[in-house]
Image (cartoon, rainbow, N blue to C red; front, side, top):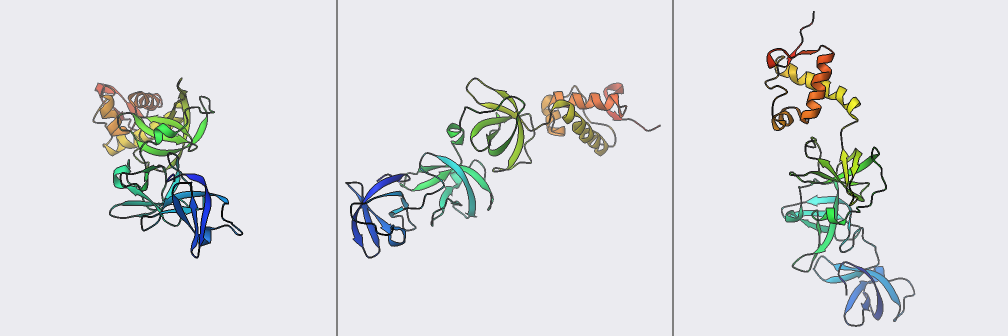
Length: 277
């Protein structure tokens, strides 16, 4: 018997509460409500093997949303003290342990997970290892705008997303993704495709469009500091990122835009809001 997989098994014996199926060595119960009409001993049936609420191996003719070693999109139906439970199309929800979470989801979230067998021989879900299962052969070109789902925050690298829930991509770490949560679906733009097929993407608009939004947000920030920023263009990229959410290059573009429009002054190394005449 292959736990967590769909397989063909033969009917070995009929009983009042269902039929026993066999792979030639072991046998497993297929409950009565799952047995096809007119099924006979010796017939082959395609079933999925998992464990019931009493931790007993059992067969079902219902196809789950996830099989062993694969990944898929599942909805969080419940969270308790031991972990989360996911709806995967079977009577018993799939368990997602806290230790297998990259970040805790909320009830109702749809998240990407993979199916694995834990040390206790139970089928469980994991939010880890999705990166290795996603395809590295995207059908996109640079400049395409694509729907993406956030599945992991990589900290040192960036934010990992799955393009159309299928293809591997990453938002660079200098872009602010703090407002997003695991499972969020966002629009990204392809900025590069590496030789190995991995995509680089951005949540920012094209520079000439994004610059206007950045400039407006920066002007509001200057207002919040009583008209004078406590740092200049010479500040470190880390300080600029922390204070504005922008990369140093984007910050300089926004400053240039505001200066050209005479909305700020740059005298004495200070970035000040220009006074109205």
